[in-house]
Length: 68
Image 1 (cartoon, rainbow, N blue to C red):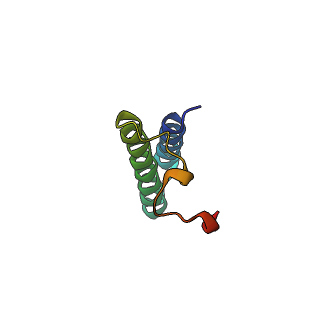
Image 2 (image 1 turned 90 degrees about the vertical axis):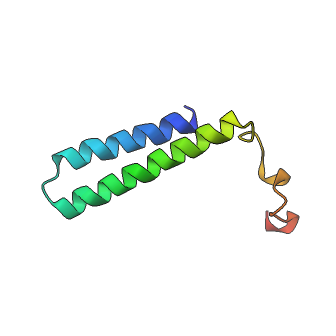
């Protein structure tokens, strides 16, 4: 399953759980987590759209060879 779909499913799961909760604080946290998953899905989609999703760590100039 592509990462974008996985993050969207995780967000949907959080939303479904939040609908069943009675505690506003718990509901708010799950909605916050769902928002994070949706942000990740958008990020992955943007990387794919811009053609950078295929880049591995070895092509990352910020990462040093001895960090691996």
